[in-house]
Length: 242
Image 1: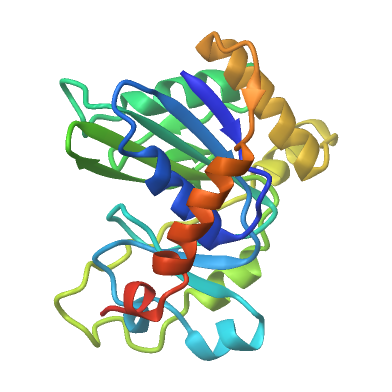
Image 2 (image 1 turned 120 degrees about the vertical axis):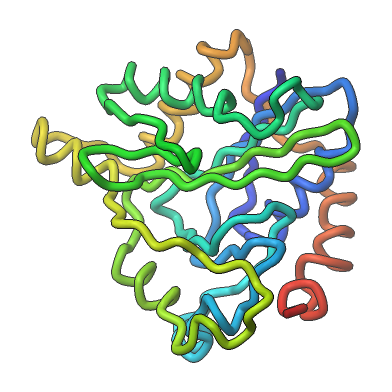
């Protein structure tokens, strides 16, 4: 297993990075990244059904489509995204990929639990949604970890005016959400800033997975990812195809 922490906060770059790593048979990755404010929609969703586009334009929130299915999610610099990219297992759609995430969170004093939709809940609120993509002998499982996300922006940007406008599209399933930072503050009265939490989580995950060093993309890899970003993840034909 290799752990890579992306230095980019551009959502189109980081989603391109997932697709760049996906075909590499025989190599297992955990990609960690933080995105600037953005809406990431599922591969079979319609932007019109999920997003308040006027609000997003007004606030500079980009809409980018990902490879995996599932519902629309809001990203900002208060949440950490984790993406497991591995060779196909005997149970490719199970929740087992979340086991190391839960173990690390428990070690950090955060008693998250896995629920039936392969998401993580804490104190009656969802703190991590996930989605998966399985193809050509590979699995991609990724999720968001809400630490200090702007929940008002989350709700406003995902407040579409007509959720059934395009009926063939996959609909999101809303859930009550909460930040991990709020939970820790209520419990201990002490929290750390998001960047500290994310680095601590990355170090603990490396220890959990037996990885000695957290890596970064090299120049030649960045060039290939940026090419994919330019040709696909910044294109309206991809992001707004429904």
